[in-house]
Image (cartoon, rainbow, N blue to C red; front, side):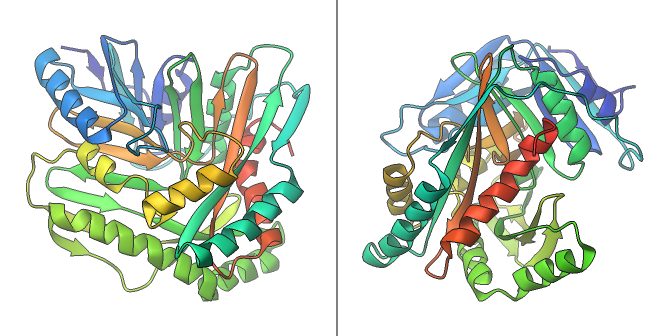
Length: 385
C-alpha cells in the first residue's frame, strides 16, 4: 500500500513541499501532494484510460491516480491522457484559509518574449471565428493565444507554484508532469467536476470581464458582466452542454435558474453551481471527466466542429492547455479542474496560454483584452507585468 499522510502539515505547508516532478492539486483550504511513481497509465482515448486506471488501482493497491487529460481527446488525437500511480501521497485540510500568505518569491526576468499570434493576428482570428460561426452553424468557439518566454537559466517551477498558490487562494493551484519532461503549472478558478460517493458537483464558468484596480470601475465591470446578453448567451451554452452530458449518469440534477457573479484577482466570471446524484456508483470521477471534457467553456459547440475551427486558426497545438487535471481514487471519488490560467514549462522555456469564448456578438478588441487579463495570473506569479 502506498503511504498516505494527512497530518500535521497545513495546505500552505504541503504546497511548500512541492518539488518539480511531483503532482500538486491545492487550494488554501486543502491540498494533495503526490510524489514518485510506481506506474503510469496513458491512452489517447479518455474512456479507455478511465477503465485502465480503475483496473490498475484495483490491481496495485495504490489508493489513487493523478494526472492530466489533453485538450484534444478526439478520435485523431496523438496526445495521450497521462496518469501516474504515485509512490507517496500527502493530504492536508484546514477549517479556514490561512490568514497570511508567504511572501512572493523572486524570479528572473525572461530574456525573450514572443506573442503567438501577435495582437493583430489574434484580433483577425476573432473576426474569422465570428464569420465561421455563421458559415458553419456554430453557437460558440473558444479561441486562444500563447506567450512564449525564454530564460537564461533553468526555470524555478517550485517558486512559480508557491507564488500562484499565495496569490490565488480560491483557485485550484496545480502542477503535473507531462510526457517529454515538461511540467503543466497553473491556477484555475474552474472545477470541471468532483465526485464523492454518489454526489456530483460541477461549476461551469463562461462569460468574463477584467477586474479594475479602481473599486468603482471594478464594481461596474462586474455589474456589466452580469447584465451582458453576449456573456449570458455564452454561459447558457456551457450550462446546457454540462447538464446534457451529466444527465445519463444522474438520477437527479439541480441547476440554478441563473448564473452567479464570482471573481478572481484578475477576472470577473459568470458561474453556475450544479449538483447531481449518480445512478451508478461504479461511474468514477475520471469516467465523468471523460464524458464532460471538453466543455464549450474551453472548446465551443458543437464540440467537433468547434475543435476543428480552433485548430485551423490557432498557430499552435494546445497540448494540455484547456485539458483537465486532477485525481481519482480506488473508490471512484476524485476532483478534476479545467486546465486554464496555465503554462507548459520545459527546462528554460515556457509557454503561457489564454483564451476566450467567441459568440456572434464578440468584439475583437474586447476579446484580446480578456486574454491579456487572463495571462496576468501566471505573469503575476513571476513578478511580471
